[in-house]
Image (tube, rainbow, N blue to C red):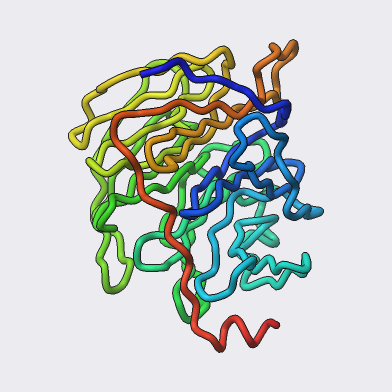
Length: 292
């Protein structure tokens, strides 16, 4: 395995939510509200796809609607259309006791969209995990989370991994394929150093995770055993995705009193086991057209 490299000129404040759609790699600079595209030329600058006036946590492509994204943004979940129009599906964190924003999010293999929320000041237990169903319903499925990251799903969608970065743990939940109901969680990883952040699951069911504050990305086998560790010249890895056998890693500069030259860079490295594209979100036509 080669050493991760940062060949692009960009340095992001809080690069996260990186996804491979099967044709494109997209990511966000959360606090800047920017959705970015990474050109196939690994030395080319990132291209801005959209810019919102609120934080943008992550997106998933909307099936059957090229260029439209389902986004965890601001205090809720919205449709982000090719012309930049934003259509809100729900804003469940409006009016919360403390100022809140959406954080990481992803679609599962069945087309549901899962999005976490957190307090701006990372107040303990203030965050939640929401699920967007095909009929447009948004359901709070977990509460009492501090900083939710992921979620990430096993290739068959039967398991969900959710990091609570504020508590240094990753939990694994069984998922009912028909309803999206979560079963009882089991502890997958508890970290004594750093915080688990963005995650991706490869074709063997192993979990790659960015570990904030350590300058490392780690691969854990399906039983939680640490398999390997990659070291970066950036101390705040924040997100990962697998585009085939290429692992992409986002990092952040936010909060660093003296960022190094590679803090905030996007890194890439080839790995032995590939991943599959991020699933698209699937919504009933009435939900999409009703907000067109």
